[in-house]
Image 1 (spheres, rainbow, N blue to C red):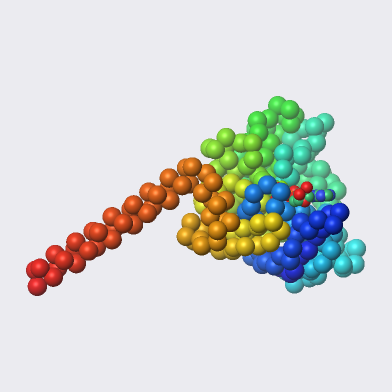
Image 2: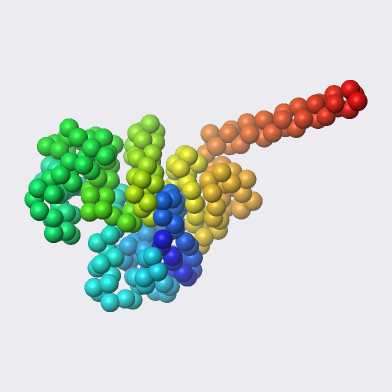
Amino acid sequence: MIEIHNIQKSFNGKKVLDGIDGVFESGKMNMLLGASGTGKSVLLKCIVGLVKPDVGSITYDGRIFTNNKLDIKQEIRRKIGMLFQGSALFDSMNVNENIDFPLKMLTDMTRAERRERVEFCLKRVGLEQAGKLMPSELSGGMKKRVGIARAIAPHCTYLFCDEPNSGLDPLTAIKIDELIKEITEEYDITTIVVTHDMNSVLEYGDNVMFLYQGKKLWEGHSSEIMDTKVRELNDFIFSNRLMRDAKKVEQIEEEEQREEDQRQEEEKNRNK
Ligand SMILES: Nc1ncnc2c1ncn2[C@@H]1O[C@H](COP(=O)(O)OP(=O)(O)O)[C@@H](O)[C@H]1O
Ligand SMILES: [Mg+2]
């Protein structure tokens, strides 16, 4: 579990994060949702320690991360897997070498143990045949899968994904989301996914936080999000025509259900 409290961050006098609180539980798809430029990536970078917040605290399973000693920070960092926007694979290394890299850097596994782990992770993401390929030979979806395999290879406890399905076709995007969710549940990982994709959120969001201009305006389960009364969130969701149509269908179905209930009620009364 990761807890953040009152995270604030400004760049050149401009406030990007304005006091954000949150709890991210393990085994769940925690999602940070918001339009571009609302501070999602900056918040994720604060949580990982790539950006230092001006104010606020971050704890990993009760251990303070912000302002702690370097060795404690490094110990926590070792347990973090990160899937960057655009996958960020090393172009000069093949798939096997990419996944092996964090094992070499972060663990004292033997060469044989590492080879076994690489094989296992590749298999887990459905790419057992791709070990010898170079990143330039992979499709967008495959790159993301390799990115996920590399992130989880050192047995990560925490997994952060920044827009994991951006740039992918809708079907591949869903498969990547699905894979992240499966892995999260299977290994009880504390996962945080940054996204602006309502599809992902509706399908996979266990705990969704909506960010708007550096503030958290809404938080809840994805099943509650369509009924929100928060205007900014409503505007965000229904800026998409498909979503507007979906909402209309939902309203019509509710109306029909009400009429049906009423009809049955009247029928019952008649038969009394
Ligand atoms: N290192 C930086 N220096 C200055 N401004 C930054 C820096 N990183 C992010 N910003 C600004 O912070 C705001 C939020 O950015 P970001 O978190 O990347 O948004 P998004 O929600 O799209 O991920 C943007 O206006 C961006 O320009
Ligand atoms: Mg971003």
